[in-house]
Amino acid sequence: GDDWATLIEKAVRLVPVAGHARRYAEIVSRLAKARRIVQIAESAVDAVGQPDADPDAVVDDLERDLAGIRAVGERGEPVSLADAALEAACRIDEVIRRGHGGGLPTGLVGFDQDVGGLFPGELIVVAARPGVGKTSLALQIAHHNAAQNRPVYFASLEMSAAELSTRLACGMSGVSNRLIRTGKLADTDAAQLAEAFREQAEASLHIHDASQMSV
Figure 1 (spheres, helix red, strand yellow):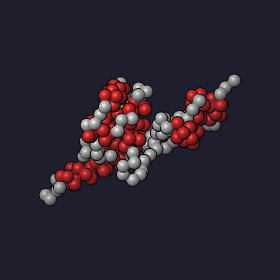
Figure 2: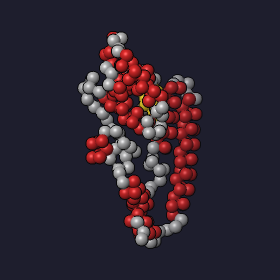
Figure 3: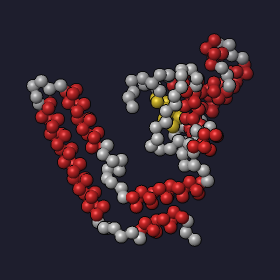
Figure 4: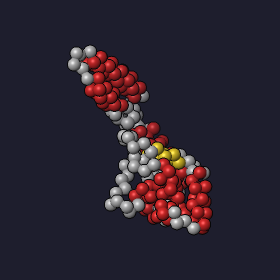
């Protein structure tokens, strides 16, 4: 009567393992990380104490070395294949129970059905020549999820938040951005834009439009 993920979990649990080995490994990893932090801090103190020290260079080196500690393994420790298999089985079981892919939907029905949506850990690049709708596509995907009460953060290094909102409203209403720029809006156009802005106000989408942001 067990589902297949439960059966896999039981099979994994039957494999004999050294019960305390993982805990010992965690202690060794934690102490090694602490020692490395002390080494980095002492090195920074020595470097900044030199007569010709460049504080900015010291900060750059310090940030790089500290980031290197955090970057050693996403979990900070090795993962056994048994644990990985159990996690994978649970993910697949969740997909089966939901009846659809486990990715974040884009709102593009064909893409979501064929690919399953957007998955955590993936880097998705939307590439095309200028002026064919890359920003509009990204906005539509963001708004599709925000409209379903999923919190969305949209970083923009080029367009302001108001410009993005206008671009999104045009896509939602079908009103050409050219009509807005030239001021040739009919009453029906204005009404459609007003409805689009009302829908935007209900979405959990936050736009950050600082041009100096780094990744």
